[in-house]
Image (tube, rainbow, N blue to C red; front, side, top):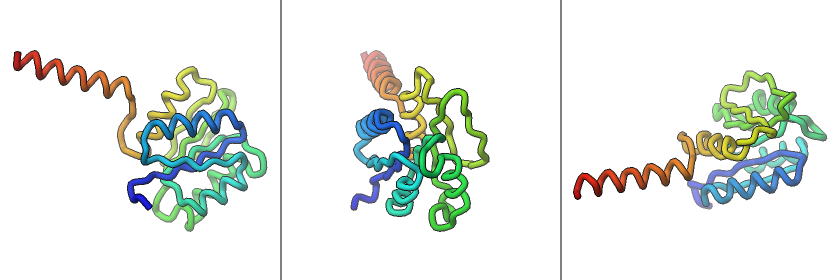
Length: 152
């Protein structure tokens, strides 16, 4: 298996949200592989099997809720033994989660910039920097122009 591959477990009961997030992350970087689940019990199984580099978790889930899953991840040595697995919590605007998990980013599903914030959060947690195609392209163009204007 490719050592640079970053496995992500995505747990959300909304099929459309799961598929959109999976597609967005898959297009971000070929090193990201997304495994999905529609409920907390299946999601917990994926976490044990995949040992992911990142977990994206909806706070309101059937069959073992998102907040209960966070508490389980925090306290389970087999899952989180000194790794402090990065966690992205996605929530509804009126249900902002209150947790003490250190390595966590919370994103509101109803935010108009939800996908952009999600992309940045995924890249930040897995690569250690913000991700922005526009910003990267802008900086490349700016660097190219600066270099060519100076040489010209």
